[in-house]
Structures are given as structure tokens and as C-alpha cells.
Image (cartoon, rainbow, N blue to C red; front, side, top):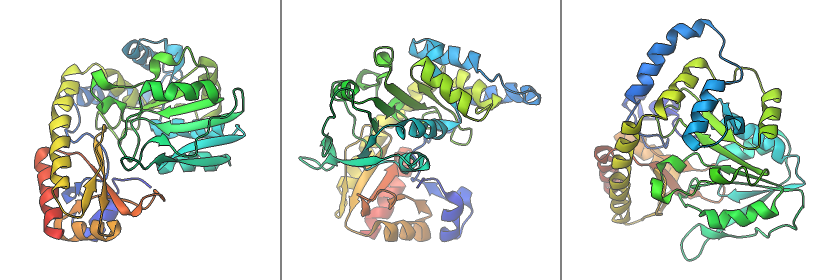
Length: 352
């Protein structure tokens, strides 16, 4: 269901987990920001006390960052925890439309509360898996229906425009948009719906800080929505969902403009290098992406290719078996440094 299972990969490759070149998890390869390390070191003395259960300081920092009231923000133990509560609320709808291919955690969250789900496939023309969405007929205004999608879309990397999504906010009773990879989109091209949350009380936005800032082990995300909804989630969930180190790191990294610029300087040329290199390999068909990963059609079985890369090159790619619409016909790779990308391209060229 998830990438980054280095313990399993190391068993297949016959090497330490630290020796695996991981293309399966879409995490910023530049490593921990210095600002995060300093915040962790400074926060160690605070571990003797419980975190502030309201996370007021963190919410104020995030609110100032997005220019919205802190009352509209709820930090969470990664985006996954917040998707669970979004699944709980979507399950209260008569039917929830799920855009597919879909991140496996969506089905987990919806299934945990026995939501009634109708899957809608991204269109397949003129390019594989691109808008419009097939089977997504807009319900009547006021109908008790929900919609769950992500933008940029995982695993295709497609970016929906604000103009494309806004009609759904008029038609669906609840719309949940996962913007976990939006930070990787250049600022001038971002299509975030955060400016519209006050206008649409039926909108929930879920964001992640772990991917852009290379902090998956720290677990930190946040939801943006109407305060009454977030207050209900806060009352239902476990107390102290975010540990104090994660909260302090979040406050530090969102102000780290140097790190943000370094990441943007890395991503665009590295992604283009990887995309062009994959295009040149006969038997591979990469899709253009607005995120920090590429979905690649393959003429070889993806799980067989995954094993071969592990055993021969100690490289881990993400198979797409958890995406039923993709199966063995696709794999996904994160964009890493240009040196790492070249290593992957050479390994794939030798196999194909």
C-alpha cells in the first residue's frame, strides 16, 4: 500500500536497508533541513511535558503562512490521521465518489467506517489518465454525497485547475481534497483551494509537511476546514495527536525559505532529466507529472522488474499492485538527485 518499505527491500536485495536506493517513496531527497535539526535539538528539553492539546502556537504559525485564521486549521499525526477523520465524515454521506486510481489509504479510511463508495476513473484520452473524470455525473444540488480526490493526483502526477474543481464544491455535500504534493508545484502554477475554505463550508483540505521537508518519520500534516468540523474531529480523536518535536519542527521549516528555494532548484531539472531518460528506453512510457514522482507504463511485469532491480542493483521502485486500475502494467518512481536518477536510468536501460 505504501512505498519506502526498506526492511522488506533489504531482505530481497540481500543488503542493509541503508544501502537501498529508494525510488518508491516520494520524499524530498535533499534530506533533513538544517532548520528541522535545530528545532529538534532545541525541543528535546520539552519532552518532559505534554504538548499543548490545542496546538495554538503551531496553528497560529500555519495560519500566518496561509493567511487564514488558526481556527480553520487542525494539525494531525501525518496526513493519514486526518484522512481517517475525513473518511469518517464521508461515510455519513449516502454515497462517496472516489477518483481512481487512488492512494490506498483512501480505501482504508473509507472502509474503516463502511462508506458507500462509487469509483470514478480518470479519463484515458487523449493521454492516459487525464481529465475528464469518467462516471462522475454531478449529483443534484443538496444531495448527500461526498467526493474525495487529490491534487496533484497520486499516482499520475496530474494537476487539476481550481476552475475544474470549483463546480464540484457547488454540487457535493462534502468535498475532501488531499493536497499532500501541492508544495512541489511551482508557486506560480499551484492550484490550491485554501483561499476558498471560508466560501465553502463543505470543503476539507488535507496537507502534508513530511514529503516536501523530508520528515516522514516525524509524522505531521494538517487539515484546513470550517472550525466547527475541525472541533468535532478534535473531540473524537486521541489526545496529543502531534508530538511536541513535530510541532516545533513544523514551525521552523515553514519559514525556511532557503530550503524551499533549494528544493525548487532541484526538482524541475531533475524531473525533466528522469522523464526524458525514461522516454528513451524502449518498453517504458512515463506520464508527464506536476509532482515529485513519475508514473511509468512498462512492457515488463512491474513486480518482476521491482525484484530484478533490487537483486541486481539494490534499487527499489514502487509497484502499482495497490492500484487495481494499474496493476502490473505500471510502476512509480520518485524524482531523486540527478546522480541517483542516472543510476536508475542506467539500470533500467540494461534490463530493457
